Image (cartoon, rainbow, N blue to C red; front, side, top):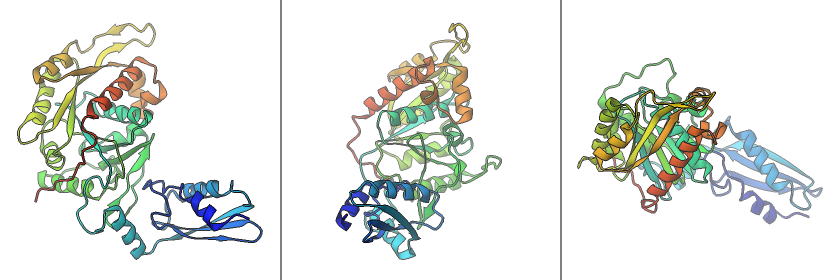
Length: 370
């Protein structure tokens, strides 16, 4: 007959799908009962009533226990944590004080990479989304913070919708393609303009950064708003040990503007490590004959990198399916990984991960300006 010890051992491999830790470590495993006929009843406490992933938890618990020798059936009984139990879990996740301003990453070693541009319309968000998914496909633990407050588009590009679960002042990111995602788009509708002044933006970013529980990440990509305004300066304050890549198009005018974003990273008051420059829309690939036409000229990315004194990381060709995938929530690195743009983005993701590894191993605290 199966023993309770064997059942609990199997359940240790069941993770809460939102927090990513074993349910027994989180206090979600209330109890195990084994009937004489081999039926196992597992009592699980959900973090909140109506948890959107309760069916997945049910499936995972059943899948872990059912194969055990002597088990004839599995019944999962779902309950809900009390306020005190949730408080205890949050306290555990935040290192002992549930009410303290938490560090940005509660554990592990994370490299934060801001993806910036001098102006809008250069494809910065689509580059961010594809880099993140490609990094996750390589086995890295990846998150994306969509900090483009006025022009948030990451949720649509990754095909993720809904509102993150929040309790006891802790927000859990949504997930798509193995990437954890937080965006202003989760909290306001697409039709609602965000009309905030600098102090409000600073406070909103501070709250999002402080309240989100990312868990263990290798990389966090931050989709920055274009330019060098309030959001960029606030994020540089919050992430003093972060780094940056600059995205531009080949056009000389766009490259000149992109230099300003790069020089912001190099400013003594900002001190973000600048990995290099990526050139998007480097040439249009004809879907019929594969001939490349340089619609926006050539050389802008290389010139921008030389002006900033950093590496030119590579170029991404224009491709109709890249735009179509972004609109449909299907990153091209997933749908067409061997296409010209898919290969370029996967190569850039691999290169960026390698160049950032020199910083992995250093903890990244959240500094809050008072």
